Image (tube, rainbow, N blue to C red; front, side, top):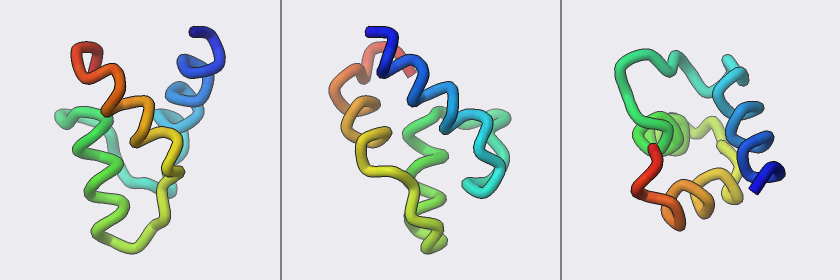
Length: 54
């Protein structure tokens, strides 16, 4: 779905959630959450729904 891909692309480019090199998107989301950076919940939901495509 194009909307999900665009949302994930925006997450990838959002430096406020930290670097994205060497970790999965879900790991990055979880790290940002643990650091109190409030990453978007819809990103996590999409990542969990599509676990086969990190």
